[in-house]
Length: 397
Image 1 (cartoon, rainbow, N blue to C red):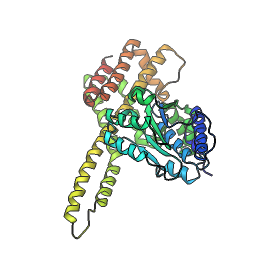
Image 2: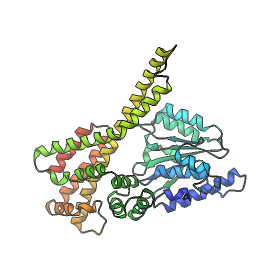
Image 3: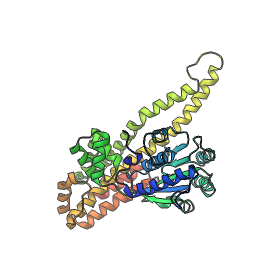
Image 4: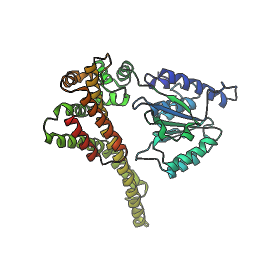
């Protein structure tokens, strides 16, 4: 028997209560009954730390809104198609580049103005709404200010930069903040949903920093585990000046390799599908014209794929920087004797050794260098320049 859709939200019981009440109210509205006042609204902003499950929460809420029972049964066609991403009335915007363009948002707003084909709700999910350009945000604002009767907007944004979503949009949304899932809940879902061995699941949950997707990858991908170990060897491996450039090069190369590995198969499949759709490989009259059109369309697709690869590379590098920051945080925790959970408990011996060699001031300078590197890359500083500057400080303290 399929579990209710809410089971996909790991460790988010308070948010589930809010979404459940809203879904029940939405079902009452569709049925023409009296709905609970204030439970349902047309615009939502879902925030939370990385890995907390913002997009999963949006999808499960969308499924509950399309559910024939209004409870998110997980079994009806509305639930299944919404979760699978094939529901005609659930539109998902996942930015593959560095931003969401105004043209993309205008097309989405226009489509969202239509009546739902199922008679229930037209749901628009915008992942990473903090990447909206100013023009795109203005186009969305008009729709949020004067929403169609049965349209719901679900915006997702990281809690560390909620101000990146314009204040005018935020003021018109009901905000739901997700929390970092506890390790016990993450381990349980890895075992029950993904079939991971309990010991491996507990380890992955303890070192993922509350990031459910990262825990799944660490528990199932040996290369991901090797990359993490390589990153965590950097703080104690900077002995000579030459190590600065070697470590910086390894960080950049690892990020590029990870992005290439993640994008290659998808890129090739997209290009082949594009050529087929444009009539490539056909015979007869008009073939030359079709081929030119197909080649032009593929070139546009390749530009979008390049932008997506850049974003993937930056995200991968940022993940490595988060791991580094966690190590220096563990050194400070160990040095202070605080009773706090370590970010990398499996590297407790290394952080303890560093705590005896480094002063708290030098450790803090190293941590600040990592955070400054993350910020510099967000501001489009060349990753290699930012990383080399950071690693220099990591070595010198």
